[in-house]
Length: 231
Image 1 (cartoon, rainbow, N blue to C red):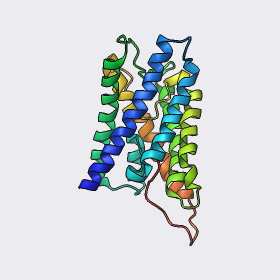
Image 2: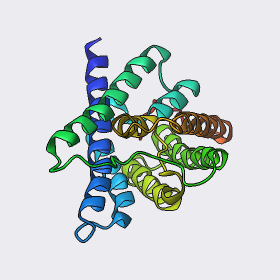
Image 3: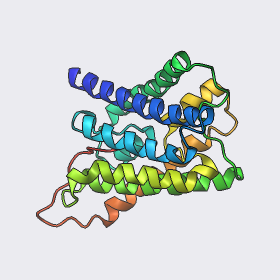
Image 4: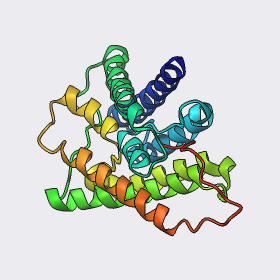
């Protein structure tokens, strides 16, 4: 039980950092565009994921994403009994980060970085599925396959987050993460399209995990390892 507590605290800290720095960068770019360009926001999301993986991956596996935890559970890399506790820690981490931002920002902004589709609902759903598929495919490869270069996991996953955010950000916000989307939606009161950012990442992540398990082609010398160093 104590070990699970340590892991869930690590997940809380990881998602807190992701939302505080990521959504904070969105607020700063809107408030001080001459100082911080909005084009740097995807880089911030990628960097914070990368550093948190290296800081906490050895404790909790550094999922930092309810969709990733779900996919690892479906692919049998993560115990079902720990799934609800991880989810609770992840969502609380994101909400706590937004709450602290409201206390520390000089003015209460209208935009907290909520992910809102700029295209039709079903196209946005498709984008979130594909973006999360790409992210999860990289994650499960570098995190669970002994043949992958494990020391590069943080860089590979952080770069994937950055890449997906650059490409999909203008269209859907490139959430890929229900915990990242829920927190700003609560503070902005934007709930009409929130289901996209729960459903899309869940579908994309599970498909990616199952597909990689199918194509894994383990050699006799290689073995699966538990989910570690993920996003």
